[in-house]
Length: 127
Image 1 (cartoon, rainbow, N blue to C red):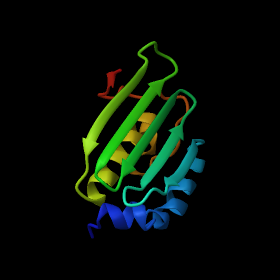
Image 2 (cartoon, rainbow, N blue to C red; image 1 turned 180 degrees about the vertical axis):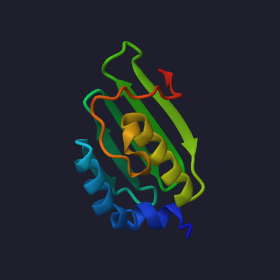
Image 3 (tube, rainbow, N blue to C red; image 1 turned 120 degrees about the horizontal axis):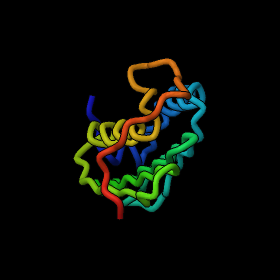
């Protein structure tokens, strides 16, 4: 079911996903932060994810603005950014999945952690 960004962010509907995400992140040895910026009527949701080599951040607002930033500590590519305009919670979850795949590609499809595997590059542009 698609929900509004206000329900997902402003009313903290995202909390129902927190436990599952935390369990998955911990299983893959990822550090994470999930927090809210409570500034009605345009509150925000911020998720930061760190692997041994990459850092990803997504910040989404009730207004639909969404920014994703990625950094790979093994390259000199700098910080890569993308901006999106979200329509609903489905858009947010797609962008969150994109960020997670870039930081920890072995987390897809409930794959077992493979800490020796090189991760694939992401299609973000350096700022």
